[in-house]
Image (tube, rainbow, N blue to C red; front, side):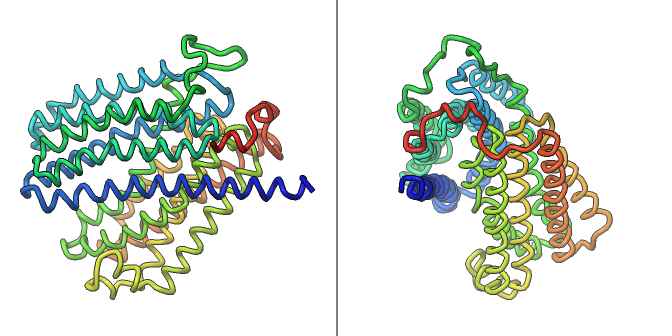
Length: 425
């Protein structure tokens, strides 16, 4: 009887943890969207533009944190209890040093006050530092705690800014409140991570394990950056090549792209630790689930394209509903590319993001020099680019899996890890 109930029980636990991670990601995105909404109501036009610029720069700088989390998760999945303090501090130092060096350039080119740029640099550190504990929780498959940690970080990053804006503290005051809350979230996140995060912290190497270095962090960060560049390139090109009205309409369509891209992100979060231990069943299941989500979203956009555009941009854009399936398909292809890149990172590939960088470069060349400078021309170029990137990555991942040989399940090392009931707590 146990043999029949255990898989069901495990599936139920994974459904619960997946829902928790999805809720935490939704909270993060919701709070991030609330910041510019409040800024538009409480700041001058100049300060609102500065706030939007700061958010964009924090997101770009946060790529280092995302890369650190991925690298730590992969390494911890392979080498339990590996220390991560040293690489975290190194990543934070490199990121901070680059930002400090760029302060004069940011101030002069983006016309931001020096105090705002200084706060920007300060707000980047907690994002990178927090990635360490999130990566440990993900790699150890303690997904419920990971969801709590993601929520704590989201509240720390955004609630201070939101509160400052709501209380009329202005741009600098709101950013300062956000800075304080970001650092206040770190000890809470450390408690959420629990005692497992402190094992063997004094050493630089664990017996039978290996050292996590900046190279792995750079590899994962470059993949995250490639994903951002590729998925936002068409929006930037539309701004440059279309009329303001057409560019605005195109930006509404990209809301559907982003929704289709990030909706199945939780699948990658849950699958990454098992993929790091060469579990081919998990890898295939992740591809199948992400692909099925993408197909469902494309079908929904086909059947209710007008409603999708109406929800994304309002009644004025409902007539563009016939284009909805193509924007959804672009996001679905990039979602598949995202899970494929993570599979490559999990397998230890040195340059997993090369196909995506090539695709992004091809998108720019085709859109600027070959495709018509129209709404449909850029849309078709973006969809074809996303599909080509996903196909190229699928070929690369399949070839890599064949070179490594068949793997039906987790490696022997993974069987020594805590059972699922402990990992998800």
